[in-house]
Image (cartoon, rainbow, N blue to C red; front, side, top):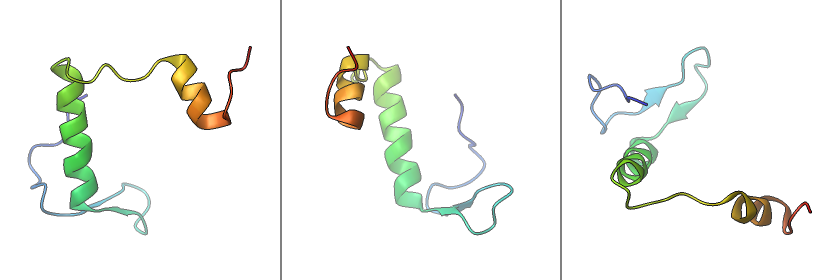
Length: 61
């Protein structure tokens, strides 16, 4: 996934097709940092079991 490099991360981004949704620069910077950590192997993400626990409070088994 490549993020646009033309736009500064200090500017909010308006979501295409929805002029009412604006992504603040802080969220953009946090997302980019997380993506870079994932690509560098610093963040392995979460397992399916961890995601299920977070979403539903228990495993589906």
